[in-house]
Image (cartoon, rainbow, N blue to C red; front, side, top):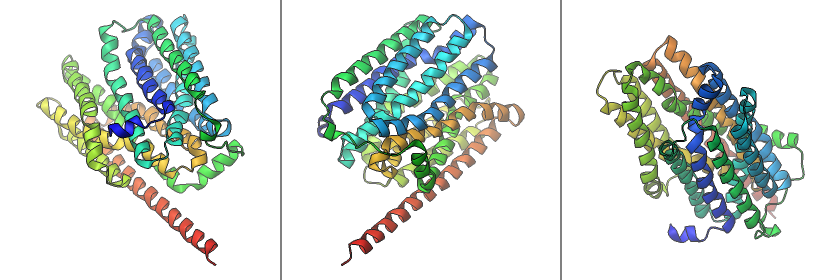
Length: 411
């Protein structure tokens, strides 16, 4: 593995290390966004939730066009522009003195994220021709994202970044540094290393996506998985709130268990499953998710605490297998000249993220926690069927292409 890492191009290392730097600084302050909105602007919980949902939704919708744009004009310009807009968005958050400006800055952050991540992920695939190295690079990227997400809030908490608006300057500095690093390394990328820019228009690209049934089924399945997973981060906390002050004592270890498993076991499990198909890995991950939510549904609210931790271990093992596979599934389906468009469109899966807190709150209020967790397991079963259908569609398409090529080349 280390030999493969040493062969990564410089631009890929900038993407990977920049991902860690920016995600760590981002999560030092972003989890405390609700605290700032409540303390400084006296916003009620409903408005805070609406702003955070708007941020996710704006990013999901905007990513569709930005991914296409990176295919149209090239990755370099889009990535550098995204870093610049990120810097401006966080400066706006640091300086905003009225609620509507702060909300605008939050939405701009969501849009900037969708503007940066699809072309960055596509660039990894562009610059690494070897399939196994490309797969490893996507796994490293996901690993660094999780390290930043896991330890960023803890560092922010220890540094006192729990509601200080000025801390957004730190994130602006991190993204500015990343942008300058891109400018430096892009000078070393020869034009012949870049994927040729596509000549057609946005509506032409959308027509291609609409006809790609394997891809559409994949995006729908991803959205259902993201909808389900977020219940572990939002709805589970609301459910455990019925325990009063004990919720912090229970949920803090849950977060630590999840982060530790991801950090410690991702690469050993990657090695273990390296010779298995992507569909097999998806199914293994979904079994972990389904098993965890079924356990959540059966655990008595006032029962032994350790069962919550056992269920979290099962879910985290599924996450380690499933989430890094998302990028590999997109990479497998996307044509080389449309990687940006496909990675951008994959951001539509975040619609599941924006719906999860709303649906979870309604079900918890009117039907209770066990109903929510069991129904989530059923949603994941639907996702498993969609992944199977997507895989079958792709195999049929590849078989037809092979047959067509044989007919054309036959003397």
